[in-house]
Image (tube, rainbow, N blue to C red; front, side, top):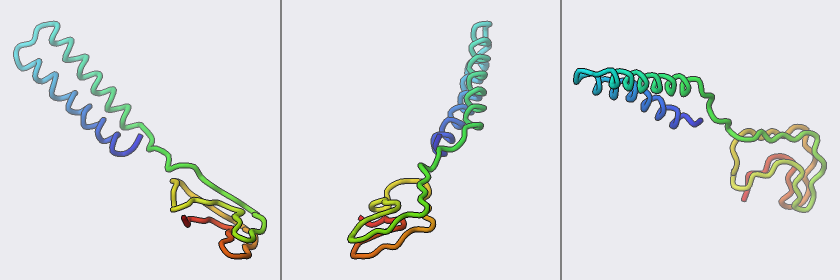
Amino acid sequence: MTQGRKITVIVVAVVGIVSTPLVWLLNGPGAGQFVGASVQAGVGVAALVWAVFQRPASAGPSDRVDRTGTAADGGNTAIRRPGGRGRGSATAKRTGDATGNGSNSGIDYSN
C-alpha cells in the first residue's frame, strides 16, 4: 500500500469513528441507532488498525548481475534500463570488458 493511500484510509477511518456515531447519538438514540453507531465505530477502528499495520509497497524488482562476459560492438552483458525506467535497485559486480562503440558491461540507463 502506498503512503498516500495509507494516510487516506487512516483519515477516513478516524472520520468514520468520530463523526457518524456522534451524529447518531446526539439526537437521543434508540436501541437501533446505538447498535448502528457501535458497528460504525467498530468498522472504523478495524480499518484504522488494518491501515496502521500495512507494509509499504515494494520499490520494485532488484536486478543483480555478477561476473558478466565481454561486450563488443554495441553489445550489452549486464542490466539495461533505457531512460532510467524501472524502480528498485540495480547492482553489477565484477563485470567483463566492454569494447567497441556503445558496448556496456555494467548498468545502462541510456535511451
